[in-house]
Length: 201
Image 1 (cartoon, helix red, strand yellow):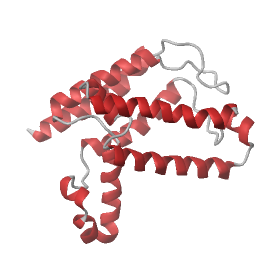
Image 2 (image 1 turned 60 degrees about the vertical axis):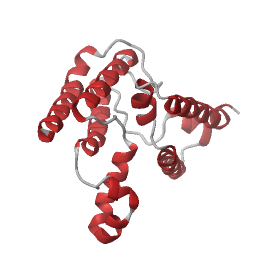
Image 3 (image 1 turned 120 degrees about the vertical axis):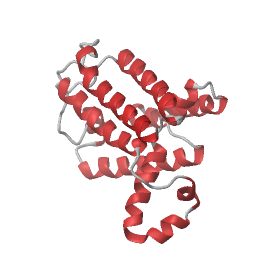
Image 4 (image 1 turned 180 degrees about the vertical axis):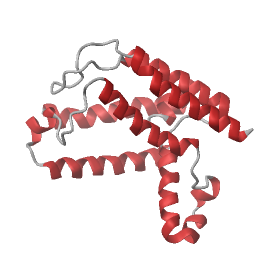
């Protein structure tokens, strides 16, 4: 039964990724001044994410989320070097680091982003977005350091908060969880608090 549910979720994910480009071109304006393609409609994509979240609950009895999947992936990599240590960690005693549908979702996110960029003619192949280059110059290393630091802080915050933007902002909000709605407000407030001084002050 578990194999059937996992397979069903994989089919739904692949189906949404392959079918969405045909119906997702609701906006003609580019999302980035440096691109010329038609962006996917954020309203349609948001609705599809909601459908995916509901189907994930139905088939797997688990919420849709990414931060735990990253932790599992890290555990799988760590187990290649020191399995005994990984197995002693409390987190991995509850959530074994194995390749399951939630880990495959991470690869689906990357594949889906590539598919969206290709289908909208928005694959720029550049390291620096125009807004970043205008504000901070053309040093690629600075962009990479800031992106890495931001990713580490985001992952740390997600683990402390017990969920990420998808776990709280999609799955938790869908269940009307008060804690998830508070976390969602804090995500946006934190993003604005960081972006405003970086780009507008």
